[in-house]
Length: 328
Image 1 (cartoon, rainbow, N blue to C red):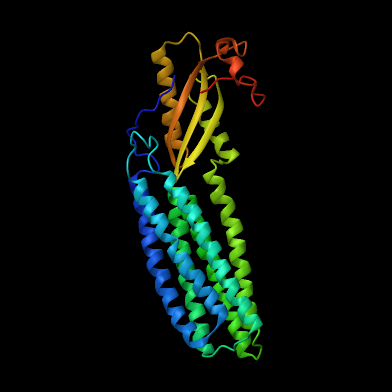
Image 2: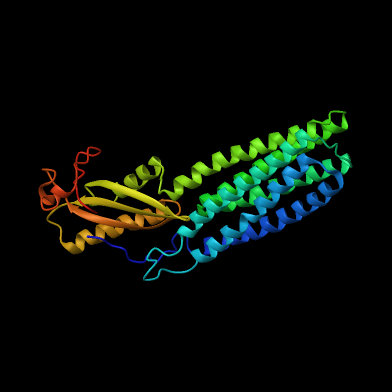
């Protein structure tokens, strides 16, 4: 018995959460563009490759707001006959675009650093360049706090990853500051070496953020979250067992499927009521939960007795004593 009705409560991932995401992106886009433009002007004056690498990264970080903005706007649209789950997967696609932008900024910064190591140029206007690096650090930290707070609030992995990206950008700005300080103390190579450190940091960000974004795109879900779904469903009165629990994220909306077993002599109406109670409990107790499909089985003293018709289509499931092979 599958149930997939609209719930009267506002589910996680509703238009209001997308609006919050768009607000965070507006703030971060404006802040980072202002910071990067200021730094670019100082780069033109000083010739600092460390500050250039930091500026490129800040521009790239600002541009990552655009695909996420588009994705959040698409996520506000409802389901259609063709896109029966809506457009929420666009948010995960935006996460992949963010990875490509970070990669491009790493390649560009690395090229500039290699050029300056082979043909060193001593930066000028050191105090001004150091001040610009401090501005970059402060701007990125403010943006990081906005993105992370809203990302955790609405359950958006892409926005959280972008916030982590901005936070480490603040550290790379401080690395540029240190490199320029080294130049001021008489070590000209400190500037390109700081740029090299920043480039390595960008690659580290790419690896760290990439794992989370790609995992979400491939429908990875934390085992603890599945355990929570199982626990919440199992507490509902009338549920004898819970198994075949699955979950997936579509953007910042969490969907699940689960099979519950109930007493076999219950009526269809009673079984349906229990499944609705399970969905109701999940909507209230699981953060960012959007909806669930609940399959109802009659409780079996002899596992597999009620699934003999389809048992030969599915391999045995060793992960649960009562996990019956069926397609739900």
